[in-house]
Image 1 (tube, rainbow, N blue to C red):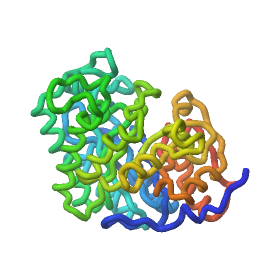
Image 2: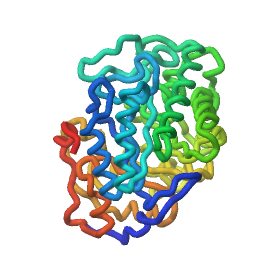
Image 3: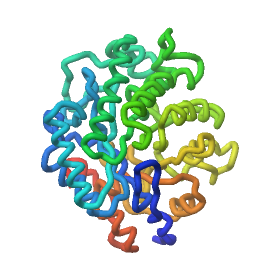
Length: 372
């Protein structure tokens, strides 16, 4: 397996108050190991190991805001209430002690399905009581519900800053609540939170961003995660053209997002090959081009199979980083998030940094069953 010079991955990066020693981000990955929603010693050690392994920025697993039925499994951590916040304080202190930087990912799972037979004590909520086009589930949010949810995101962001997290990420991807507002197939509202364009359907997200920015002040960085695809339909494309992508993302940057985290299944695939060819800009590259904002790319980094195969019980072997280095060297995007490779090996970044390619591990689905 060949590998190009990886030094481009180890350039520092800074924005507002956030200063990173390298360009590698630990992708947020749902782990379901927080009993009663409270991070404990195992979670603390899990994140500390990634900081010790030289990850530039750790993004936590999705951690939910203070809304009824905001999560779809009892092992998903909360980001509200004293027991959970005290647990997160231990996490960020351990990460800082190990020289790392970290953001919690603030989340609401919307009307997605419950996992592992778990059920919340309230109905799931979404823009129009749908989980997917034509598939009813839960209740439609009232405008009061929407306002309370916006406030819950802002309150959680304030708590993140108070606890000492270096930045915060808002989850707006993968068919969860915020993304259900973006998606015309699940947003059938007849009020100001819908409309024929993606820009109009972004109002809910824009209100969250603006509320978070006002709450945390001008210097605290805000990251937001987006995706074209949904877990309900991997083929969905919210923005069919660069102009539509600009209409979608630029207002959110104007509202206060500093970094766009652009999720795709395979980072090397062009977003609009009909425009710039088979080696054209990926999702993060186009997002950076149309908004001017820094971006994070992600998608099967360092492995030969995409993430969806993991849920079918398939492993992956290490893959060359050449395509990643090529895109990073041309500044197509600013940061790269790595998921399964770091989940399986806390020292993945350190191994790449030291050129220890023979020591790189693949992904074993058995890793999902524990906090390595």
